[in-house]
Length: 451
Image (cartoon, rainbow, N blue to C red; front, side):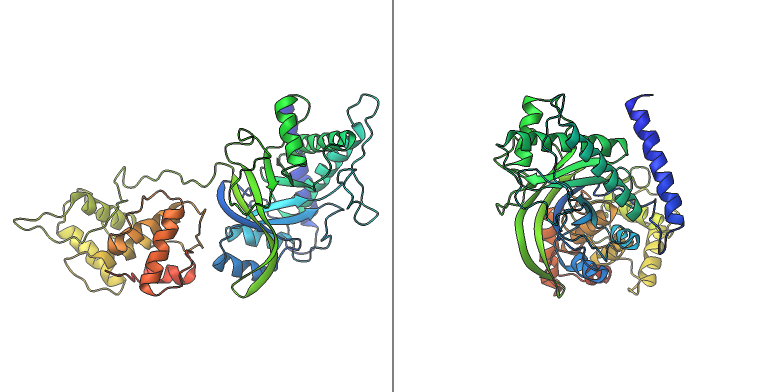
């Protein structure tokens, strides 16, 4: 059996066992249909020792710039061994709301790290070279810790394909046995994480743990199994994924997080937490799949001009008319041809939409009409890093609001989208936070505009 096939079988068996155990557990069982986390994302996140309550998470979802959160799920050396909020229901709820979760294990630490063992009953990484000089004891510890971490993840409903992070705190990397045993531990961790169907991530300081991994990657590429993703602790205040301690060719593209600001208090939505700030670029980064409407009709435009019946010297823009016909057809209000002709059937369908949305039926299809049609659909919270059809709807609607936004309808909530949204929020008297929350969705749906 190949290594891949064996890994797949082991992951399937583990998933079955966890499912059986969950059937007999108290409370809501872990959800096997939860999305992979963190998935594809470029944007901001935070981490805190104690997983916040669901109420606080909801406040931060609506008001903070963050869309990812680090949670300590396993490890005898973690500061918050007791996690009262961390349940399968909490995991599922946060994933359903759009949060990207970063599950962290803080188990055995480097043998020369002076702050560990933290409690006396937690192990440190064994620095003995062993008979063959491969630090076998450390490797066995890494394998055991990975197995334990996967067990904790599956119990919570963090599904295979998700990234599990090992937190290796900073240490003296000039100490040979300390460094090499730590690398051996992390290598075995990664091997076992892969075998059980998950993605391996390592958090450590830029100048010690990650510098050692990077040097091994370049100078001894066959010595250790490298993690798939890295989480850089470098408190330089710069929200990117670079540091002078690491080469730029490693873990690129989209396989890095940087913790760029250490512990401090932040308050969002009247909820205060002491956090570290992070910037993520993982998976494929934030991206949106291509959309096809009405067999290829273009519905995204930099401006949505009003449409009026043709006259002797004026013809409505055929491209915009096609967009209107297509959108009305997708909403079940138009059964005619998508031909770009602003005819009686198109006007009748447009009137039906106007009447259904408490607007005056008219032969003119104006900007407010465009806004109500373009924005119609689901209302999830969107912010920097969001991606998908909901983002496209917002980008189109902002273009319709005044014709001044001129946004590229990419489906990715980028800085240009955030800037255009802030400008619209300011002009219509909405809270200027650059977030599409419930109030902003309501204002866009009500076609509030200026100019």
